[in-house]
Image (spheres, one colour):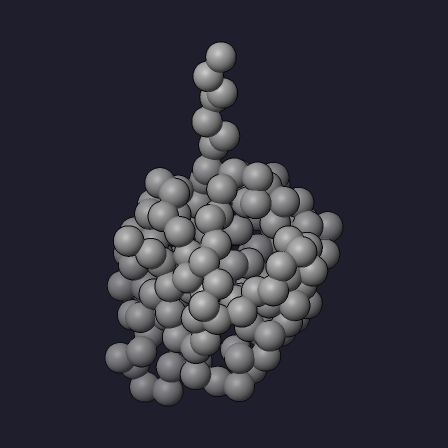
Length: 147
């Protein structure tokens, strides 16, 4: 299976520790984090994605706001510059251990944080990054090489 993500969620998943907008949101995100950790690939989409799904039934879901679309634009630009590839809808991305580590390193020094400006989770994410991303739910390990 493939996980559908909007661009700014590439940044959000770096610091996800199990907190969210509602219990349903957190249960859904936990399941997505497990799938990412097992190596499922990502399909970049425009607009609401698999993480947004539990919020779409509520009144005025914020994932449809123009400010969120702008977060996607900024995150796509910064992540694309870092990864040396265009981050755009339709791209399939393998979030392997090396890519995850590269994104987290850039996130921790502010290199891919323009999309985070004004986000209500910004302080929490900063604290998680400052703590070395301990207890984050998305984890990938580099498989040992065979001789």
